[in-house]
Length: 185
Image (cartoon, rainbow, N blue to C red; front, top):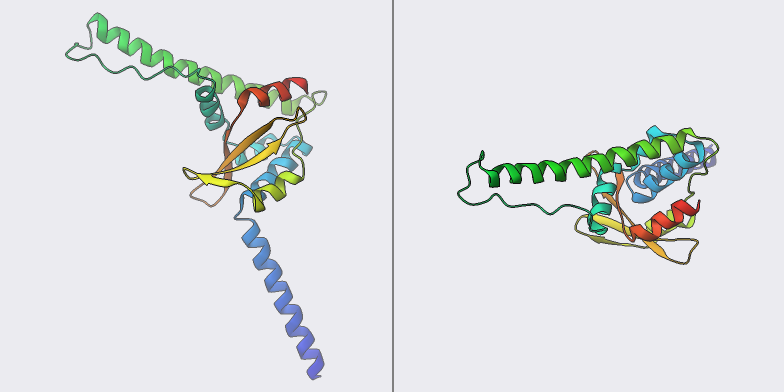
């Protein structure tokens, strides 16, 4: 009877440790990468967008490619209805429109890619899961890890933790190499 109680305690302890380990893993970037990997395999756009902030990725990509329009300071002492004031408003609006159009275009393209079964979606290598656990570094509250591309080049994928504790991809570096890889697919 005593041996039976020890076995039961050991089993309960193992179950609790296992559940604790799973809960701890759910709080890591690796868990997010796992869900991204699964969403690409199953073509689940909703899950993909839970773990990838497309707007943020596009904003950083535009910045990295030098395509963002610089913020134009308000001309001093220029009334809002003057030519300088109107030009300033127009440039600010154009900046927002360019970024909004780029975000909308990428979002639409990603949605279409998920819906088109004839289109191959990129696959994340399983090594990416391991890389998020043992590799990478944190800069400005973004956790980066490297992903090798078939071309031999490498990109860094950046994830940020949300207030709810979910990690989301918010940035990819070396955007030109990433775009080449996507277009090759």
